Amino acid sequence: MHAAFFLLLGASLARYLIRHEGGGHTGRVVVLFAVFGLLYVAGRFVAPPPPSGTRPHARYLAWVGTVLTVWVVLLALAPSAAWCAMPLFFTGLHTLSTRTAVSLAAVLTLLVVASKLRFAQGEFDPNAVIAPPAVAAVGTAVLIHLKRQAARQRALIDDLVRTRRDLAATERRAGILAERQRLSTEIHDTLAQGLSSQQMLLQAAERVWHADPGAARGHMRDAAEIASRSLTEARRFVHDLAPADLAERTLAPALAALADRESGAGLTVVFHLDGAPGPLPERVEAALLRIAQGALANVREHAGATRAALTLTCLDDQISLDIADDGRGFAVTADAPSATAGRPGRGHGLPAMRARARQLGGTLTVESEPGEGTVVSAAIPLTPALDTSGKGGTT
Image (tube, rainbow, N blue to C red):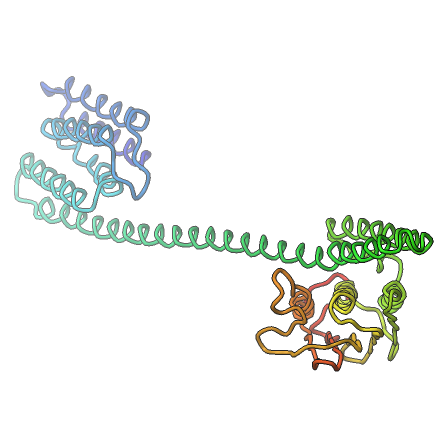
């Protein structure tokens, strides 16, 4: 647009000098052409055009009015300046409101026609009356259509940016909630269980402190060992690592070690392996181990059982873990399938186990009757839908 303006400005000045050389107003006309060009250049720095889609500010409107005034005076002295109306015409349509721009285009067109008729020589030229309005009408229609398209595009882009911002905020909130759920589950399966075991051992040591010092010291050693193991677990889940029991062994040996560790103090835990487990993803091994830990914690704290059994069953398309006990059992309901339902602040174990199984596309079921013991079963599919690369995730 700037190049077109100066090209037309130079051509208009050259045409005037060629056709009106020696006229009485030549000096003033040349000065007006120079002022006109300088005003156009100065406006780019003093009164820059407003951003697209915004209302023009007062300084810009004052610049437009000054340039148009100089052009009208120049047009009255030199009809060749009519060609400079084209850049002014497009500038007005591009920056002003539609109603103001159309009015400006109409005024510029009338001035150009009047100038053509005023300085016409000889016969009447119909093109002087028809051509400028036709060109102005076509240009106005095209530019208004482009402005409306640009406005719709800006609205769509704004809506897209706003939607993307809302989506990012939603994903951020979902990530915070997921991390909070992960931490609460890990704390329940590690620190809370360790603290519960330590409390029971310390209470037992206090009861036999004077009657059987050897047994009390044994309980204290067991409590210290649990504290050390809980500290290791805490450090590992802070870094989102696998459980400590899986650091140097696979799932079956880890479950056997868990059974040995939980045996004692009136509870015997045995481990059975059915089938040959192949390589499993870390997420599957970690989830099943945590489910076993949570289920045994419930057995120890609430079931009043004397025996419990861990059974790991390996099939071609799934792996399942059953935790059974001979405790007091409970009534399983759809609303509260938990042995601790109704106890304030308790009952997090089964929902956490169920969430772990669901995250891997599996299921967790609970079968129990009062006085008949409890069986907790977790089944994880090992189909192609499950990522068995050890990196976690699903396809």
